[in-house]
Length: 167
Image 1 (tube, rainbow, N blue to C red):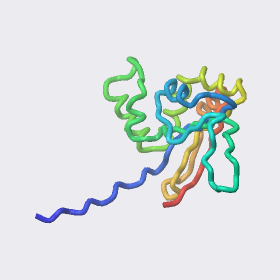
Image 2: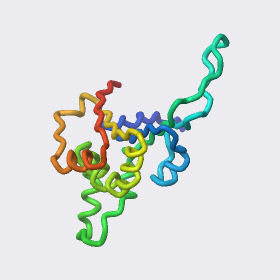
Image 3: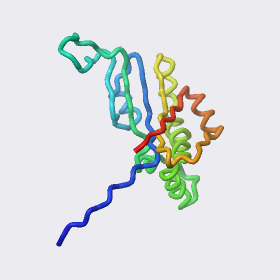
């Protein structure tokens, strides 16, 4: 029996990530507090990779942490509480997975709001927090950021960065 070729999984139409820069924060502590493993991280004072034999070893001037929020599993882990009618929660999650507007709402209103105290502390200590939204241009027919989302991002001091990516 000959094996069938599987078509590659379609690329997601968007990707949400959280980026944190900080003068001294330990990325391991941040991962533990957020409950997310980073895609990339380093701590202030850690040696930088050596790119040339002619340069001396240098160290990172700040800590850096980048974690993905837009995986298909991520919205399913966000609790909604007892006030949702049975079935409504699953429909909302399904919409959030398939729509970047829904995922953005979920990220901001649920995830970032839950971690608001941590995000405010990072800003107060001289750090920067950004919510990155990478969108495939073919999937973007327009993007509206609801006033509620803008308000929460502003209150938390989180920048929204949009990036249009091609295949």
